[in-house]
Amino acid sequence: MSVIKVALLGFGTVGEGVYRTIQSHQKELKAVLGKNVEVVAVLIKNKEKKRDINSGVLITTDFEDIIELPHLDVVIEAITEKEPSFTYLKRALIKGYHIVTANKEMFSSHGRELIELAAKQKVSVGFEATVAGGVPIIQTLQQLLKVNNVYEIQGILNGTSNFILTEMREKKQSFFEALKLAQQNGYAEANPSNDINGFDAYFKLMVLSEIAFGEQPEQKYVKINGITDITSEQIEMAEKLGLHFKHIASIERKEDRLYASVIPTLVSKSHPFYHVEGVENAVHVKTDLVGGITLQGPGAGMFPTASAMIEDLVQVFQRHSTLGNSLKNKSIIKKEAKDQDISYWIVSNLRNHFSLSVITYYDQLSENVFLIKAKKSQLLQLCEQNDALISYPILGNYELKSEHEKEALQLLID
Figure 1 (cartoon, one colour):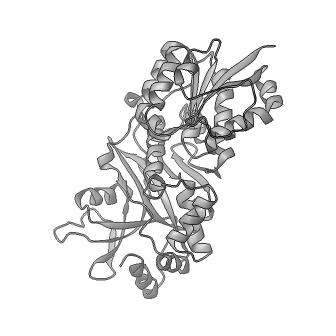
Figure 2: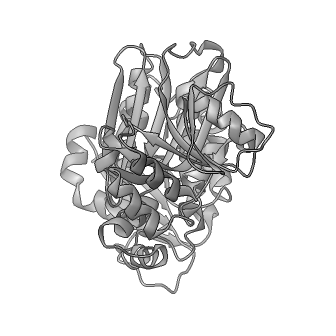
Figure 3: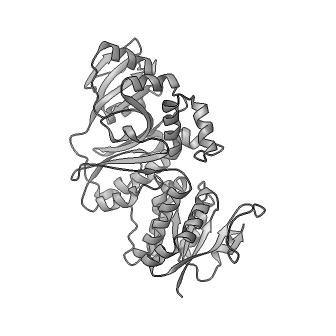
């Protein structure tokens, strides 16, 4: 019987989820692929650790044992950091194997190189799992880009930070209490730095940038702020104003430049992100034809990411004849839509010499706190000119109704 042979790199939370899903969904996989799928090898770090892996599967700490396997079809990578992941996957492509990866840090830096190499070798790359767990945003963007021009992407791309902010609001917990619970539930690593400081979301945003715009902004021009300074008091005050704190990654094109950020944001009830809670992820895409669409789903945990990788496994074989993986070419980017959103931002630490001429509206709430109404690109220019600037945008429709609300907004940032 014809079999698709898989080597699995890594057997942590995601790797084990992939293995267990392949074992439990053989009937479904055979129905769509016409073949059984068999994990023939697993690369691990520690041979002493007990794992529930069938006998007959090669379990090794040496990648050379994997790469030299005869008749291998696909390498599924579920390890972390840029290296040795990139080297392993590059060698797999050179050998003529399809690859599937969940490694957003590596892929944000080397995705284009891997896809171009795969095209030369006439194999495919699956990378849906690099962004937003079980939310199929990459395939959606690739379909939209056939006709639609995407001009802005906003996302809740990290389930850990969203879980923490939800727990702080709903259960009145401190940041550290909510983080500890996230770790106990397996949503946060022992070292959660990338999640809570915004870099995990940044890596994912750069993958989306390549797909939608064919390039990435330099990291030094991307404003990245974590959620560690948000207090329970701020969250409570925001809720009284009908706002929720969310950690939002966003990118938009204005003229010949990309503006990107990963920052704590206030979201009003009118915005689709307002009700995205716990470990859920969501992505809102704005285009010139279909308008705005939102995808939402689980973004953390064993099976959401494993689900994306298994779907990629199917896709790499179904699209193999057409070599359907692609990142957009910079040369064919269309200009952004003319009517960009203007929204409120609360800002403090403006330099005295700064000119407010680019701002549509501003109101001085206190000596150091301003309520500003402007386009995102304008405010990110402010941030570039003033590293000390503290800012919270408000997503969705929001209008101040009283002086009391102005005072409450001031307290969110003072």
